[in-house]
Length: 370
Image 1 (cartoon, one colour):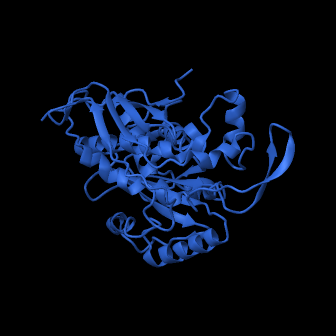
Image 2 (cartoon, rainbow, N blue to C red):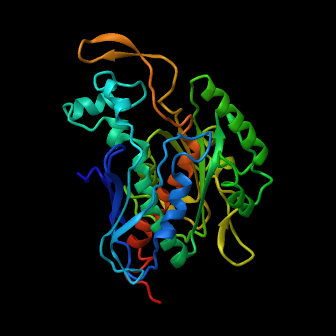
Image 3 (cartoon, helix red, strand yellow):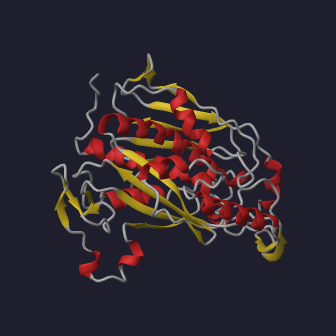
């Protein structure tokens, strides 16, 4: 049985901390020696995930200033474990005391209470809070730099759909998508659609409700041959890591579920030679993966996020101390949708998986030559 708070085998990280504990962070093990990493490298991505940035996110005010505790010497990774953390500073734990015996609908309060016999840290969801994804971003920022400097791999995620409003990206180039995605509050490359998404979020937040959506992720410059079938295929490892992000309820690769409605002649990707002499496919319904192994085409997948569970509207729940139904109103500062802040998290978890498989496949050495 694998360790429940650790993911990866060659490039692995262990997540620690709770939403209202002293800090959250990660310990990365297996990062090659010789990679130049700075706190500013990590901070750039953390700033994209941190709370309190706009009206469409929680107003919890956290600086999320990263500290690298170990694993670097003279600005370079040494091959030793790298510990990164941020300190929590804006906790309002009293908001959660009343939920000790009244589990919030949509949250992990009840199963966590049962599994740990009531000893779990329930404040803000504890280990089940989206706050722990700050650690995912810390690990992913290192993986992104490793992949970019060694293999030229680029990972771009963005909001594809929110509250049923879908972006049309067919007229945008990959560079435009990458440049536009962080230019608005909802992280959608389609600027006109982004405004509609924001208006919907604000409206539903005013009604005491929340929204879900879909994040799409595209990885380019992937060399063919990455992936360790059968049980460590790219899809298997990505699915495991992506489902470790709170609020994720689905993932599909390439043509995904829509491909099930096609014929084989329509869904199969035909191999051809590119102008540069490489083996490519005319279409990419496979999402860049066949047999669990990269084929050199972009890896494309989409992630479904459920509506944020904490809403201002009154809901019904059960008082576990009396086993009687009661009304519940969740106070506090919550995201009306998790989708915009999830975009960098999806990118970073993807980077960790691909870095792990690339090292396992011999694509990245244990010591980087300068």
